[in-house]
Image (tube, rainbow, N blue to C red; front, side, top):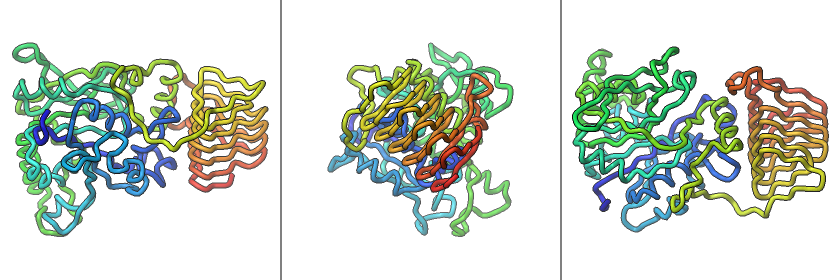
Amino acid sequence: MRRGEVLALVQAGGQGSRMDVLTRERAKPVLPYGGTHRLIDFVMSSMANSGLIDIWVSVEYQVASIDDYLSGGRPWSLDRNRGGFRRMVPQSGSGPATEDEFAHGNADLLLRMSRDLLHFGAETLVVASADHVFAADLEPVIERHVDSGADATVLTSEVTKREASENVVVLTGRGAGSSTWATGLEVKVSRPSSGVVANEIFVYRTEALLEALFELRRELSAEAGADADDGDGSADSGLGDFGEHLLPRLISGGTVRTEPLPGYWRDLGRPGAYLEGHRDLVAGKVDVFDHAGYPIISHWDDRTSARLRTGCQVEDSLVSPGADVAGEVVRSVIGPGVVVAKGARVEDSVLFSDCRVERGARVISTVADDRSVFARDSVVGEVPSSRVARDEEVTLVGRDSVVGPGRHVGAGARLEPGTTA
């Protein structure tokens, strides 16, 4: 792919409110995964490994928390003099209200970036979210999309119907040739028809995308009975997320292809899904790190090797560099620099960097942010009532929190950053 033919856009600006205390002070895409990676690593690595040259990253919420990590695209060798990495932030005063400031969904974001997309002039636009775990070679997908002449190609994954109810189900039918075409959507319905969901990786014909965005802005503005171009600066176009108006409009033209994404994929945007994604990892169900020549590139601080002390018990777990384990770790992910003292037990949990679990403490089905402390004989979380992790049963501990000696924090609790319990 030559420079300027294809533009890639990573949408990394969402607030991530469903992750609650874990995203109070950071953008969701830089949440850790597996101890040594961040969520945004997967989309950035997939795009870089696919030979994409121009990659823009849209950031809005807690920008400082993601800027340092992105390092101008250097970890993915995107820090070029021409093309490469570009950081996109909200602007104001440079156009109509519906194209300024913060977006009201991932489709609305595309409208707000429409002037930049027009100016760049790429015929093909690849758009992907930054909070999913996957690995994909997108080059052949892009080639098939261009050859088909479709307005859009939607990549799909098959999940359980329970998980599909939290996502956008894509209904399909056979078209001319061997292609499968989207015929409709089910957006977060309680009883989905299938488990085939849009995994938020899209390839658009840029001209068709912009035409649909502008048409929808006019129609939605007329329906709202307001002038969306009044310069107010706070107008919401009404486009929302891709499943609300944009994709249905493109599907109504009969020109949206679907293509299955091979291998593992999971959206980790909810506490239960986040823990489930780590359960999959320690169970050996995640294949994204297994592709020769297509590494998932990360950008972590250097640490010494992990230390496993005499008498410790580590079962079906991952232990990151710099960790020091003397106690028990069962089906868990231990982040960099975490200390698990003798007599402590961590089970079915994810501990971010530099947490400390003191003697006699028990941490169960919990996700704990950086530098959390679990003092002697404290108990945090409980064994869940069902096999599938439910949001309301996963305990979340904000960064720099301290659970005092002998204290008990129940299942599903949310400790704000800096809490002393």
